[in-house]
Length: 439
Image (cartoon, rainbow, N blue to C red; front, side, top):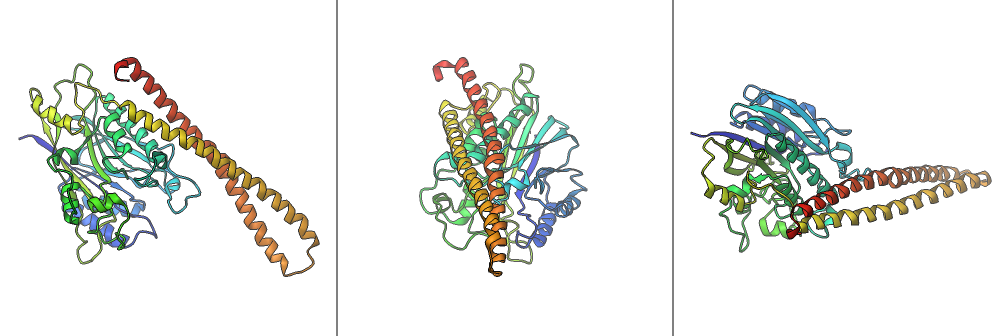
């Protein structure tokens, strides 16, 4: 009997002071995981270390090797718990995660990135486990430059994945990618990183919806993990998002995997296949009417096939579902590269325009402050003094914020975009030189 690896990923929605019913939900999550048989657990939005410790203690007898990743001012919110020994860890922050003035979004402060641990599996050897949480801002509709930060996340995540595979490691990647399966970020992840979508391979027989779905059908057949009417934290108002209306939610959470890159000596390595994948944590927590989180989780059972050679028919079927196999490296198409570069170039120009406006506001605020300071000497009405003080405070805040946003963050953002644009230009040149007839 082929060995297997049981994997689960869950966005815990564990924001301190913000997430509703956090203590009750974390306790329920810990209890559910303690009763489970997972070999690998990946968590996102586990911001409070006490919550992480509660979950860790509940599974430590079965999953003794754990890692909580640290990044940004408030932490990365990412964790991995595993059955097998961890021999290396890493945390790679994304170069663009949000704007410092977007306090409500919060991505800038939490330092999103990709957390990685290398485990020593008794059959596969070194396996790279990755967990991530992409930026949410931008939605799914409208031009791609609305999702520039998420595209940067996807590109940098794909590079980390590809590098791990080139080191001869199997890769299992999990997390909340904040992207639907047909989106450009997911295209980058699957085709540049060479990752296989466990849900897509195990549900390849499910046809696209032809009519109105029930919420249960959206979960069971199309892997909906967010914005489902079955979730108690879903807004009660009907959604205006066409994706949500079509599928009764969105599939944003994934378990992905791939094999080591070919090097001439690993043609007969054991092969990972997805035996089954399901959406989990869909019920209410015991004794309560609230859901485990504002997202559902995803589990997958990955089978280890020791008799991989000679199964060309199965390999071909997997390729049809975007799986990348040994005999052909995975690359992006020319259209995808062009589309991504266009989005980045547009964002670069928009960043320049925004910085000019913000620096103009900064200069205007400074001039207004000077005018107030000079004018205050001629104020003879006492009750005007508090108003002058409030104006000075407001203009000082406005000037400081726009200086930081327009100069420091603006340059930071454009330097990061320039790096990614240059990487894509080089990548495109290499592909053109290798396969000019396709370009």
